[in-house]
Image (tube, rainbow, N blue to C red; front, side):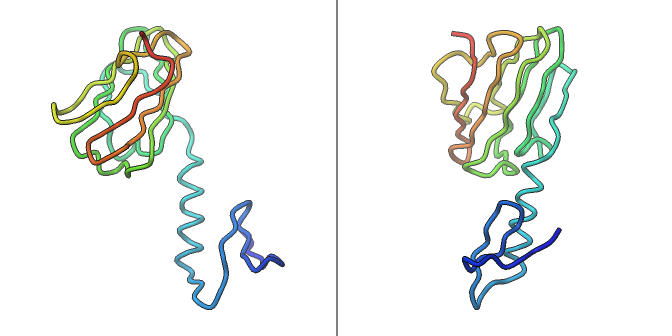
Length: 141
């Protein structure tokens, strides 16, 4: 990867501009590069029927391919997913995806049910607070 100084007083990393100045630290550049790498991971193809979200699913895209129903459990204190971040995916197989609370204190805000509607239904689980999530997508009404 090359780093060059842009005429606007910024370092240019691909399409990401990092402000320069007397206090520019290598940590700023490294965190920017690490952040870009994290968001470009390949999708997770999941063929099982019971998935508990963990560290490997933070900021990921999950493709459920099962022919039978799939349960995605949101654990209490899913600290690997920072507030303001999300996990998303799509129901590829015929198995409808159900989102389940790993603890009764977890809040899932949703305008429909906690189930995907059909094959091809995308979904997004956004972390709004410590144990509060917003679920959106093509969900069963």
